[in-house]
Amino acid sequence: MEFRHLGRSGLKVSEISYGNWLTHGSQVEEDAAKQCVQAALDEGITTFDTADVYAATKAEEVLGRALKGVRRESLEIFTKVYWPTGPGQNDRGLSRKHITESINGSLRRLQTDYVDLYQAHRFDYETPLEETLKTFDDLVRQGKVLYVGVSEWNADQIAQALKIADEMGFDRIVSNQPQYSMLWRVIEGEIVPLSEKEGIGQIVWSPIGQGVLTGKYLPGQRPPEGSRATDGSGGSAMIARFMNDDVLTRVQELKPIAADLGLSMAQLAVAWVLQNPNVSSAIVGASRPEQVRDNVKAAGVKLDADVLKRIDDVLGSVVERDPAKTQSPSTRP
Ligand SMILES: NC(=O)c1ccc[n+]([C@@H]2O[C@H](COP(=O)([O-])OP(=O)(O)OC[C@H]3O[C@@H](n4cnc5c(N)ncnc54)[C@H](OP(=O)(O)O)[C@@H]3O)[C@@H](O)[C@H]2O)c1
Image (cartoon, rainbow, N blue to C red; front, side, top):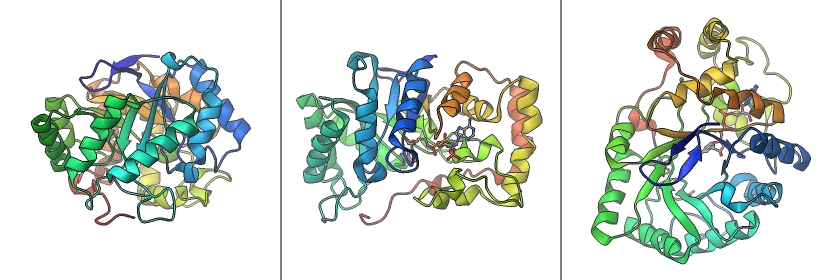
C-alpha cells in the first residue's frame, strides 16, 4: 500500500480506502462484511469510510464490530452526517442539534472515542454555514473529531466555508468527498483547482463507477445475478446513469488497454483516479473479499500520457464533465 497526505494536513491515509455504503448491513451479510474488512486490513488498507445513514445506521455498527480489536492508532476512520437517520425533522441536515446527536450515535456504533475525519455529507441550505462550522469546530475541540471535511459541495460552497473558518478561527476543511472516475470528471473544472490552492484533498467515491468500469455489465444483456445493478436497496438507481449501451460498449473497448498493462479493469479504473495528485484516496467498495484484493493492486501504479490518451479516445463523449452536476438537495431530504 502507498500512503498520501489528506490534503495539506499532517494526516496520512492509504491511497486506497475501503467504504461500506450499500454493502454492510444491507447487501452482504455480517460474515462477508467482516471478510471484506479483514481482506482490506491484510492488503494494507488503513482508511475506512462509512456514514451514519448507510443501511439506516447498521453499516457503522457492522464496521465497528469488524474493526474491534484492531489497534485504533493504526486506523483512520471516516464517517459523515447530513442524510436522515430517523423520522424527525431534526434527524437530518447540518444543524447544531443534529450534528451533535449524530456524532454521538456514530461513535457509539463504531465503538470508538473519536473519528479521524467527520464529513458534511451534502451542503445544507437550511442551516447557516457559521452554525455548521462552529459545531464542527466544537467537536474538534472536544476530541470527538480530528479533522473535518465535506462531500459533494460545489466550489463556491467550499470557498465560502474556508472564508468563514479563516475569519472566525474555526478548524479548516481538509478534504472533499466527490464522485470521481474515468466516466465522471465533474470536479476537474472548478473543485480541483480550488482544492489545490487551498490544501484540500479529494477522497473519491465510486472510482470503479459502482462496478461498471470492471466491464462486467455487457451492452444489451441483463446484469449478472447479485451485482449492484440488480440490488434493490438504492444501488440500482444510482448505477442507472451508466447503464446504457453507449457507455457499456465503450467500457468494453477499455479491455485491451488494461490487458496491455497487465491490469484488471478494476485496477485500471482505480489507478486512473490516483493519477490525479489532488486525490488523497480512492474509496473502493466491495461485496466480496476477492474484489478488495483485486482492487488494491492499483496502489502505486503509474499510467503514462499515452495510456491516458487512449482511455480518453475510447470514452469520448460519454465522459461527464459539467461542474453543475455537483449538487446538494435544495431543501433537507
Ligand atoms: N459521499 C458520498 O455521497 C458517497 C456516495 C457513494 C459512495 N461513497 C463512498 O464510496 C465508497 C465506494 O463507492 P462504491 O461502492 O460505489 O465504489 P466502487 O468501488 O466504484 O464500486 C464498488 C462495487 O463495484 C463492484 N466491484 C468492485 N470491485 C470489483 C471487482 N474487482 N470485480 C467485480 N466487481 C467489483 C462491487 O459491486 P457488486 O459486486 O455488487 O456488483 C462493489 O460493491 C462507498 O462505500 C462509500 O464509502 C460516498
